[in-house]
Amino acid sequence: MALASSWSSLGSRYVRRLKALGVLVAASLLLTGAVYFLAPQWLLRAGFAVQAWGANLDSRSIDVNGLRWIYYEGGTGPTLVLLHGFGGSRQNWVPTARYLTRNFHVVIPDLPGYGRSSAVPPSDGGIRGEARLLAGFIDALRLQHFGLVGHSLGGAIAGSYAAAHPGKVFGLAFVDSAGLPFPPNAFSRGVLSGHDPFAYDSRAGLRALLRLLFVKPPRLWPRIEDALVAENRARLAFLGAVFDRLRTPRDATALVPLLPKLTMPVLGLWCRDDRIIPPAAMDALRDGLRAAPQIAMTELTGCSHMPNMEQPRETSQVLTQFYLLPATAH
Image (cartoon, rainbow, N blue to C red; front, top):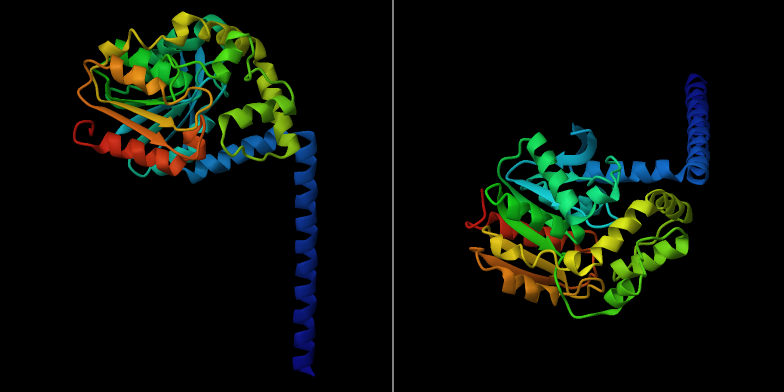
C-alpha cells in the first residue's frame, strides 16, 4: 500500500509539472505571437542578437565627434575592419564573421546613417563623407594596423580611406565593390533612368530588392518584412540623396583615380552572378593597381551581390587565405 501511495504521489507531481510546463509554453507562444504582430522589430533585433552571439561578437558603442557609432567586435588575432554597403548594416557581415572570429579580431561598424549608428546629413553620406567619418572612428578605437574589407559602397569607402592612410592598412579587400566602371547592365540602366531599388517602402519593394541581391532570396515572415520596411522608410530621404550622388559619373568611378595610390596587397572578391556590379568591374580594378605589391582576384559561384550573406563560409575562406598569406599576415 505504501509503495502504491508513493507511486500515486509521484504520478500526481509529474502531472502537475506537465501542466505547469504546458501553461508556460502556452504563455510563451502567446507572448511571442503578440510581439510578432504588435512589435516585430523586437523579434528582428532579438534574431540579430542571437546571430551575433553565435558569431562570437559583442555589440559596442562609442561617441566620436558627436556621432554615436554602434559596432560589433569579437575574436582574436590580426584585426579586420569590415564595412557594409549602401542601405545595409553591420548585420550583413555577421554570417561571414562567424568564421572569421576564429582567426581574427573583427570590428564591424554600422556606418553613420545606417543601422543603429547616428543619423547624418546626406552630405556626410556616400564615399568621401563616410571615409572621413571612418577615419575618426578608427582613431577613436586606436587601431594602428589592420586589414580593411569593404562590400559594395563599403568597398569604395575602404579604398578612399586606404588611399589616404596607406600606412595603417596592411591589406585591402574589395567585395563586389562600387566605384568601378563596368559594361552597362539592367541595374545600371535602371539607375541612370532614376530607378532606385533600395528606396523600398513596401513588402513588394523589399522582395524585389532581395531578388536582385540574392540568387536564392531569403524567405522572411510577413511581419519581419514589415519591420525591415519601416526601418528603411525612416531613412528614405537620406538614402535617396546619397543614391543620387552615387549615380553621378564622379562617384560611380570614384575608385579609378585612387587605385594607383594603393600600396598594400589588394584582393578583389566577386560573385560571378552579381546582377548589380558584375565581375567585369574587376578588370578596372586590376588595371588600376600599379603600386600594389600583391593582387588577388577571386570569383564565387552561387551568389549575386551578397557573398558575405549567401556564401559566408566561402567568403571567409578567401579572406582568411588572403590575410594570412606571408605578404599580408601581421
